Length: 95
Image (cartoon, rainbow, N blue to C red; front, side, top):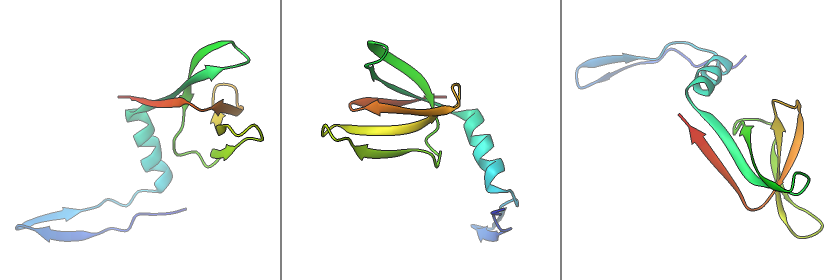
């Protein structure tokens, strides 16, 4: 488990201390603050769709398809499976 070390620094006479937290705890806290969505035109649905998106997922990547289109493969939590978005797509954050 990755840990952030305790660090104490002095800045303009004030002591600043980072609390020891695991990276997964920090990511979970960040996810609670912001929700990300990806929007793109879905050929299978025949319309523009908006789905939840995790920008920190290790299961995502971009590639160029055989047709020459830029694609983004991402993990869809609600369907528990991979999805592929064709460009253009928009990633938005909702705070």
